Length: 130
Image 1 (spheres, rainbow, N blue to C red):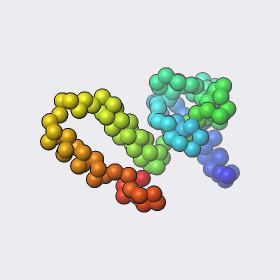
Image 2: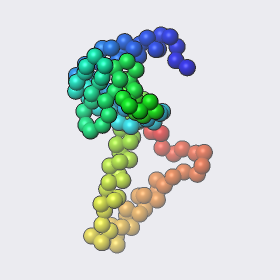
Image 3: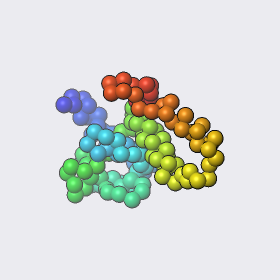
């Protein structure tokens, strides 16, 4: 549970958000992305991209009490956003990749690189970024 000081700091942050400010978008405890505030009214915060509007009073998605929420950008959220973007970019590459255009030697090199970094056994973490 956040302290009174943390709640006050969050309320101050929300009150001072203005167009051009960057915000982190969360769904429950998982980061969803980063957006820019494009407009603010007395009761709403509108961010870039297609998506919901947020309550100026608490940062929650309008019309969905269990939906997305805006939060301040922190070093941890920036790291999570970067990791998510790298995963998304890799997934796009793999989805669009046509193995038929590669030679056997090229596929062997790629296979070796990928199997070198495959997921570690449960409970171990080879990747220092996670």
